[in-house]
Amino acid sequence: AVQPSTGNMVYEEFADTAPFFSELDTRLSHLHPVELLFPQSISKSLERSLEDWRRSSGVRGLRLERIPDAWFEYNSSFRTVTEFYSQDNPSPTSAASSCADGSTKSQTAEALQAAINLPASCLLCLSALTHHLEPFGLQRVLRLFQNLQPFSTSTHCMRLSGRCLENLELFRNQTDRTERGTLFWVLNHTRTPFGRRMLRKWISYPLRDIRKIEE
Image (cartoon, rainbow, N blue to C red; front, side):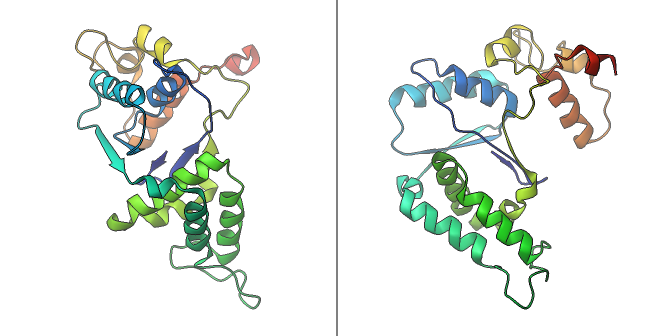
């Protein structure tokens, strides 16, 4: 997942089972995307699950976008990712010089290494994102690999399931699917988008270490 306005990227490889796809539901509920990309050849049960999540998500204008299966072919994807992160590869005489996107060439080389070390399914998705963002001129945000982090990042926090987020009405009420009356609605007195995202993260991942809570 990528947030083009901030450069934040999240990844994870996981197994799931039809027909409920509870693991996928948990991640979608936490990430709250406004656009979902999926290959043309996904199963009917997964497609129905994505359609159900779109209807129940409460996200206005949420788009489901089919993209070519060819974008998920491994050899082609590996080549796409390698070429993308090699464009500004460091030279022996200018390892710390700046690239066009503001990063240094040494940082670009590190990003290339990190990209090819991703789990195979994540590398396929990264390649597909590169293709998808290129027509909009947004693909450079994928170079900001310092903003990349796994979905599960801390042992000090609980990771609430999608069903738990739903039943506790943390972000959407069960009446009209809006924020009104939810815990987030009550606590949200933030003034910036960054503050809003931070509060949402705190609510989504409550601490389970008593010492950290008391701090």
